Length: 175
Ligand code: ZN
Image 1 (spheres, rainbow, N blue to C red):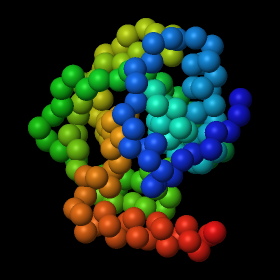
Image 2: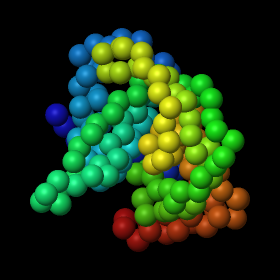
Image 3: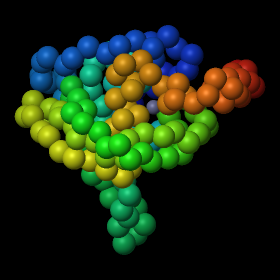
Image 4: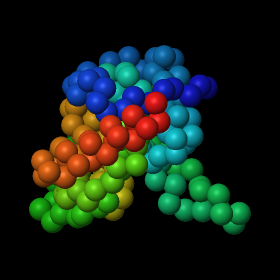
């Protein structure tokens, strides 16, 4: 396995619409393993393939909400290939979101609280499930990436510009 570089705003690749995954071959398995390693190292709880520069409809999630006796997060990796939202609840939820492609930026985003989703597992098997809580938030955030949408696009223009300005400033300082 290897760590992949995570691309950050304003990299134009983040605005690309990703293409369906067609081959569930060994290259896909390697990409999935590398994406998990990259996400855990970041650290993060979700990563879409386009965030490592691969425009394919694939994302990985591990909320790592539970801890073991030693306080280490328990891993529960989930893979979503070609995910679709079949229906969403009318009630919404506010969650303070962040993104590995927008380091150190956080903002509250409102999304449907529950979604019914269909996707393929890493072996191609089709799965359908109703998701809620943080998993629903995370899936919707990562699925936005497949359409070239970032969480800041859900904010007011003023808030979005403030975040982008702060990001560019931090980058200029780091350079
Ligand atoms: Zn993100």
